[in-house]
Length: 495
Image (cartoon, rainbow, N blue to C red):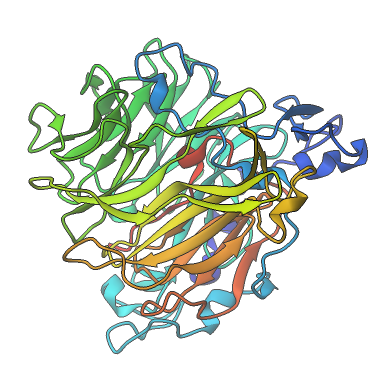
C-alpha cells in the first residue's frame, strides 16, 4: 500500500463528491462578490450553500442556552478568524501534490529511520509522520469534517492531498474520531444536527464495506464525540450529559447527567469534562465524577496529555465578557492543573489589552491542545477591537485600529512537564488560522486556514517550523471550523 494505493484501489465504489451545481457558494470566500458587509457583520455561506449576512462572531449553537450546561458552550467566537479573507499564512506554503512530508527528516532519530514505503515491524521503526501498517511505513491519517455541498466526515493522508468521505452512500456525516491503535474510525452519519443521527464505525485501512451502526442519538443530537485513547466512545447528548458505548456495539450508557467536553485519560478509563457552574470534573477508575480540586467554577474544555499529570483547560475566573454584535463571549484564559490532587491552577496564556484611540485591542484564548508528551501546548489567540464595550474582530471592516493584528493567531507555548508552568515566550505558528492539533509523535501540527487543512512540521525543542508547510488544497472539500473543538483535526494514533 505504498503511496496510499488504498485510496484508489479500495474505494472504487466511494467516488469523490462534487459541489452541487445550483450552489451559490461553498464557503464565505465565494460570497465576496456581495461586496462589503455592514459594520459588525460579514458574508457567510449557510447550510443551503447560499450567501447570507451574519454577526462577526458565529451564532450560538441551536440548542445553546436551552440546557443546564449551555453556559459551557464557547464555540461562538473562537473561530472568528476564519470568517475573514485570510489570504495565506506568513510561512512558506507548498502545493503538497507530491509526498512532500516524506522528503524531510524533521525530528527523526536512530529509532525512527525507516522512510515511507520501507519495511517495518513497529511504528517506532518509522520516520516522523509514519506508522507501521501491513509491515510497511505509511503516512498517518488525519480526520476532519468538510463540506462539498453537504457535510462529510473525511480522512486523508497527512502529506498527500485527496480526502475520502466516510459516508459510503454519499450521505451526510461528521465528527470522525479514530479508535485506540488507529485501526477503526467512528463518525456520525445521517442528519448530523438531529436526534436521529447514527453513530457508526469503519475499519482502517478503509474498505468498500458499509459502516457498522452502533447506536442513534436516543432523542438528542450526538456532539463533542471523543474516542482514542478511551476504551469506549463518548459523546454529549445535545448540549448536556455524556453517554458512552463500546466500539463492538451494545447498549449506550449514560455516564453523566450533565456536562460537556469529555476527554479520556491515557489509561482509557478515567475521563474529565466540564459542567456549567461547577467547572472541571474527573472520573477515576470508572467512579462517580468529582470536581477537580482548585479548578475554577468557570473551567471548561479539559484536555489530558499522554505522559504528564497536568490537565489543560480554559477558564474565566473573573467572569469578564465581550460583546460581538448581540453575542456575548467569555474572555477566556488558559491554565494547567495536576489532575491528581488538584491545587492552584498555573496560568499558561493570559488575555491581553493594548490601548488605542477611543478603546483597546484585546485578546482571549481558545481551542487549546496538548502535545502528546505535555511539553508543548498549542492555542488560538483571538484579537479584537473593543470600543466602549462593542467588539469587532481584527482583520475586519471597522477594526483598522488593530493594525497588523489578525483575527486569530495560533501560538505554541513550551511547558515544564513537571510543574505545568510556561517556559519561555510563546512561538507564533500561523496567523488567521484555528484548531491546532499535534501529531502523535509531536513533530507536526495540523490546523485549518481559510477552509484548508494545513500541516506544519515543527522542531520539538524550539517550536519553530522545521520544513515546508503541507497544504491540502480546497478543491473539493472546505474543512469546517464552525463548531470549535468538535471540528479540530484528529490524527490517527501511531500505535
